[in-house]
Length: 259
Image 1 (cartoon, rainbow, N blue to C red):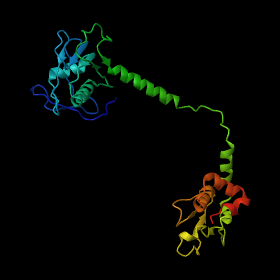
Image 2 (tube, helix red, strand yellow; image 1 turned 90 degrees about the vertical axis):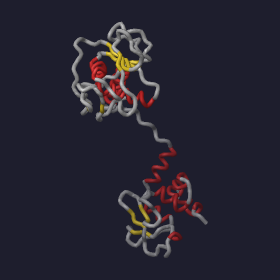
Image 3 (spheres, helix red, strand yellow; image 1 turned 180 degrees about the horizontal axis):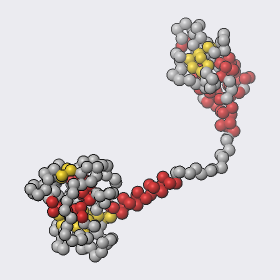
Image 4 (cartoon, helix red, strand yellow; image 1 turned 90 degrees about the horizontal axis):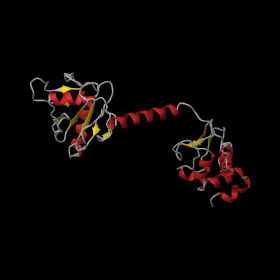
């Protein structure tokens, strides 16, 4: 999960803390660093003895004291014990991640609060290391992007006889197909539609235009330009294979026309 750079508001009642400390472009408002190096901290859960433990409020206000902000922001490693409510847990996580953010995201450990006190900075027994997961996911995405920069040459797949026949039928001059469907033209550009029953005047005035990409369109019958295969399918009500046979086997023209 990667936080988007949106404003996050933190409220505190202490007079030494701004009543509205907002993060701009993902950078929290400046706070005073602790006097010594803070290796571990915890937000939420029960107070953990030597482990500095702070709390944030629940609900829309998400109240945060200056002391809590200091621990959340400056602890080298932070355990987060989420509240029972999934909604409050997500809100707490967003707030904690925003407060910890510096040049980049710094997610906390997802903890139950019952783990033993940490021994080292990178103690793996402190819960789920969300920051480690985030970094591994970012590395994986980078590897995927790098892998897509080049193109792999793959051997060509032989075209099946069936697809060759369909392709051959699509390459036949659409004017030849129009003629086989009983259409005619005075200038070779505008043709009488082979579906005259769909026209109020039987398409006495040609409405079928032929284009340079071997497609045609009747402005009444066709929503878009169609090639030879689609034209035959619509006019005769046949399958693509039957349309290919109609186009390529001229001796079947009469047999396949509707009665």
